[in-house]
Length: 407
Image (cartoon, rainbow, N blue to C red; front, side, top):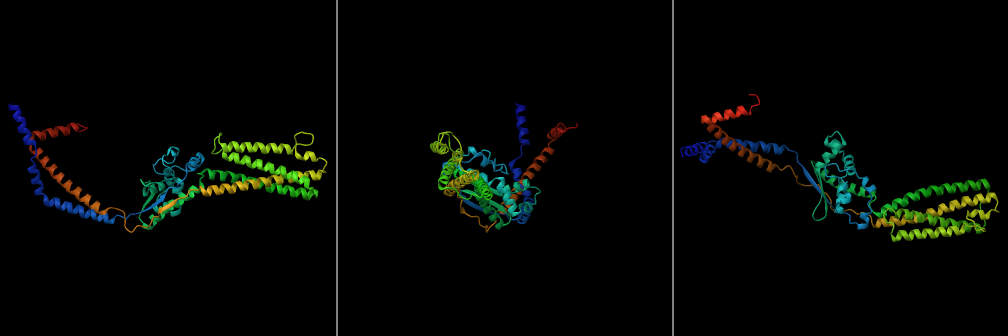
């Protein structure tokens, strides 16, 4: 019983009385007030010296494409986009995106757009960075790109110059439009690019065939043939051109159509029918398969050579005309299904600065200094009480000895 009473008595002696704490604060109220006022004045001076930051925001409506247009995106098109410079994951998981707007957010965060803006606004010199990678990181810290609950994409740029912040935000929208035009996203764009390449190759072959025919005319002196032979040649050339154009159409459809697609099956059947007609016209009187010129073997050698060159030229010309029609149709489809980026709110130069929050800085510094001063007084009171207690002082000394690395 005596031991229990001694323990409680010792506990009461060790415990700091709240009244003592209040007395300590009251005695040092002037020092606390001086420290708090000094902290407020110093933090206010520092806050006023901090450079102003302006925030400009551009809001755009994501392109409203149909499902077929989005499904036509290929891995090759995605490969043209670089990784995002800033820890947001890039477009590596684009195939698993749930919202189509995420694709365009990834494009806005791509390295291609960042490099274009760095060059356009000379950001490497402005930020004072030593490499493009550091400049991209600095730009990423100044820009916030996201998709809101309303489905709109916002691009927010912070900069020390109000007009430059607005210009950079609007430049993001411009670069997004350029990037969508450069990358084949829709089926119509893929078809147009494919036919355009084939049209360029056919144009070169047509020019070569025309040059070859001209050289043959100059060398042989033959400039015309009878109407019957010309009609047969033109008929065969036209059928071959139609077959070649149909092959181009089938090849372009394979990029986005499955093997069982009805349009693809119909195109293959039409190609088989054209080949059958060509085979009938190219048979000679003896029923053997061969070139159409074999049946006109009684013509002079010069006329025969002329007919062959004329046939090649007519063939390339017919193919070129067929592809030109397909190219125009593809351009119309692409224009109808093209990606349209609508700007809801263009970025404007802000009238007021968005940071730094000077009032908040002064308030936090003042409150922190006040609390720190009070805690320091409490700690000093506890230390004084500890030093007055000989037994506790001995225990503190023993604790310091045990915590020391060298004893």
